[in-house]
Length: 603
Image (cartoon, rainbow, N blue to C red):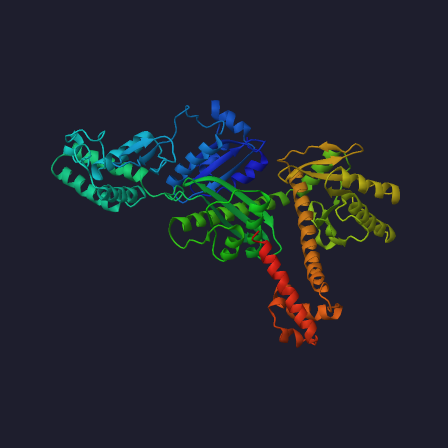
């Protein structure tokens, strides 16, 4: 029987073709499959009884994800790529040295077409992978009949049998002009890229003629050729014939959240897919631009030869900073891949929202699960804290409140830290905000929370308990919310020895802790960005000689940002009642800062 978490996700499956990736409790991919209808196929694993290997696989599934494709054939080839990439335990293992077949045109003076199992950097043209050797062979044999190259071993002084059959250009007994090969290769590449209409029309006419002449075996042979062309040659979006390494980004935004999909295309195959979901405080364009630049900086990801982005993003600026071409395709296969990424981004975010709605309907039970796990009496009010700063600059803290498992935003509070000397000191930050919050509640004789959650570990917990117990004389349980190396909610810390409390990761209690941790983190970061932006603007103006509080206020009130001030003329600045020498100094100083910033971005 599926867990409650899986039941929720099963209810949200799309009625579309695609691939599904089954994961175990350690987030490892244990099985990859494809489906014409993801909803029906994935549900079948959990709605029916199974035996043997399938039953074993289903028993280990803790989660799953899906990738939607445009057609069932695309899902077939994507499945091949994902299996080769992840080598899931429950998928069929190919013997060493075997693999899915490719059709290759060799890089020789007299080229030939053959079937291979691996791609090599030898200058040849590769097409595939194909679903099976038989289908690839049928396609190759068809090409040899329609677009002959060299089919024999080479020069032997006399025409080979294939030359007499019209399946060899005659390298066996003469020198074939390179232009003849180039023309044939051009036609083959076009055919294998999906441009099959002309050939299919010719075959259809031949099949009809054979049937009219009562040549039924010949007609059946041509019919089979048509079938294999449709199965193996029809153009695929997932498998491109352009081998340029590319990364593709697209996004979907709704209700203040941004969903991002990243496709990694290598050797003309979608080798990997990553996704991100997070709340935003800026425009989607600004957040996406920042994400892309940080993606290659922080993660040390290898830059591809080309980056594909949807329209509306600053391609030129991103390209200048990263040093690779950044393009927005407007037609063809690449545009279709962008559309596929956008659709998957939307489905991913829709799933998150609907799962949250399901979670919120069970918040009362979630509170009880948490208090039971901690061994505490049933509570109703949780106050959670988090700190935020950039390398110690502009430190702030934020508090969110959950009552009966629901956020109570009227009670949220923001704190600019005042007494912390080392602004990156988590313990000092915790002491200050806990002291300020609960000394005030004592002074105003207001009710205390049932639990205090700290986003962090032992340092934050010990600091909070020290202030509550030793300074304020309060006995409020303090719980730490710990994250794993993926920055995801892992477990809780509680008790005198700060021991770990492991909640079931598929329980409602765990989901509530996750919501609290995400919400307090979002609230703290949002507040910090506002403080830091305001402070940065003021600081840069204060550094200019002759600019005092009144001048700074005039400039910010008129222009709102450093960029717009820098774009203003000296006369425009002077018109605000600022003397001309100071106006000139402001203009020169901000231009120098802009040039330095621009230069450093290209280092």
